[in-house]
Length: 315
Image (cartoon, rainbow, N blue to C red; front, side, top):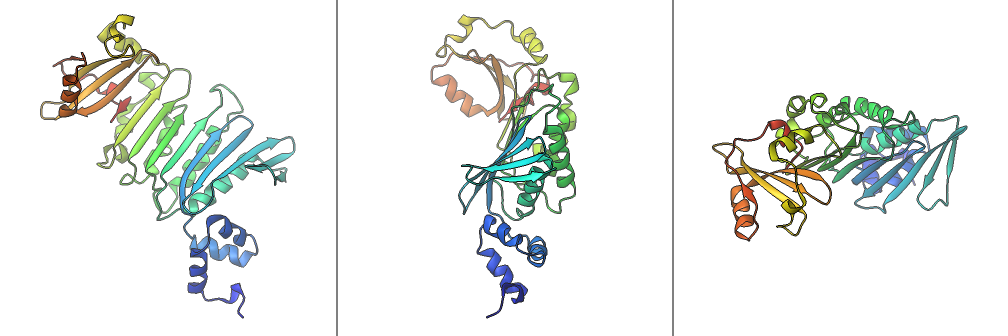
């Protein structure tokens, strides 16, 4: 019987196609010949979703596959190296004199390398790092990710990107390298102290093909504080408690013409419970249904607001 290494390339590819991602990676570690062959072939990982959680002392990966049990892995920095702890903790690996970021990014790169024709349903970046901390691993990791995506042969195919960011450059380091014909949902959350309109250049963002893609179904931009709130208060006035009582006591609506020849309206909603505004693009028939259902939402025939505001949350 022929050994695995003696099989023809076509047979080897068929064998690899029957294995899940973890089995392929185990096989990859057996010898240099197999490793080189697998790295050349890059069998599809069947990755379904990938979430990265940043903290000052560790990174945690949440990985979902279509044909495999979900994985959860922590990369922890210790005094003299890095400790890797999979979910459950029965097995742990220690890498002496190694940086946990190097190890984590290496694993993330391999995972994305083996994701070519398949579409990732959701890719998330979450952070539990205070913006001012000197031990925030986000900038280093995202810089490496930018370098990887920039020289990747194929644009990464993602249907939903959920991105917690600290500054605009982090967005620009990732978005241009995603396949615009695949991305349908984009959620951006600012996790810094306060975002300033003059420092967030929406014109630069608007040039990204993804934001103009006909496939885009949902674009959300969440932030906790912004100097744009002062402008909103200037336009709409202070929101009183009584203003929000007509719709179960939690929100108030305004509607604006989006453009002369469009069936869309800009809907602005203020949520009392959470103290935030949502900006949505909706069809006029949908708005009419809302008004006819008995809500007392106010309408306006004013010109559209400053386009900068429509970037905050648009559907």
